[in-house]
Amino acid sequence: IRLLTTLEGVAASQATVLISGESGTGKELLARYIHARSPRAHRPFVALNCAALPDSLLESELFGHERGAFTGAIQKKLGKFEMAHTGTLFLDEISEMNLGLQSKLLRVLQEREVDRIGGREPVPVNIRVIATTNRSLYHEVTQGRFREDLFYRINLITVHLPALRERREDIPLLARHFADIRCKADGLSPVELTADALDFLSRLPYPGNIRELKNLVERTLLV
Image (cartoon, rainbow, N blue to C red):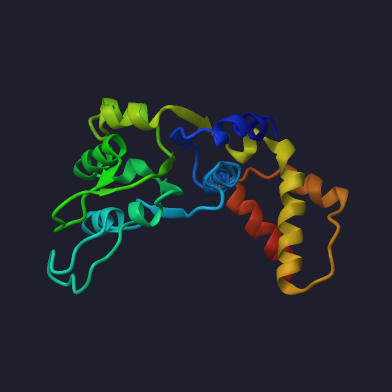
């Protein structure tokens, strides 16, 4: 709750935000929270998982391409930057992006314009970027795997999400929330989690963090 209160002022700004934390700690949910409380709330929120695509596809997804730019480009494709115009671009696991793409990303953030693959002239974009990482970007910089200039460009506002085992006071609240969502989705009557159930849930180690808690609550309700 303290973190969410602090983020109210951050959300109202246009500043780039970097969210760090282990996988499954709720980084994308926090990014959506920031967007929903920003002046861009009614504009697009476009998400891209940088770890889910090979480099060749990631470049096209980010920047778009013109028809005929490469083999298989049978029509023009808008990239995520253009799709997020006037809104928020969420770059999940930005540390997985290679150095070449990092250089192109830095240019977009500096110039506020994007070059489609095969394009003749840049396209202006008005976006806010929220990025996440499950690694220490500072360590990645020292190892030569992440550009130092890009690091300082996206490191304006940094938010760290602790692992669920480090904030066990949140577990009962989250468990009730996930139970309510599951019951509504399946048309079930609301379920009240007992004190014993909440105590049991609060003592588990949760290597999978919030994602593991959500799955456990939903599985328990279903079976």
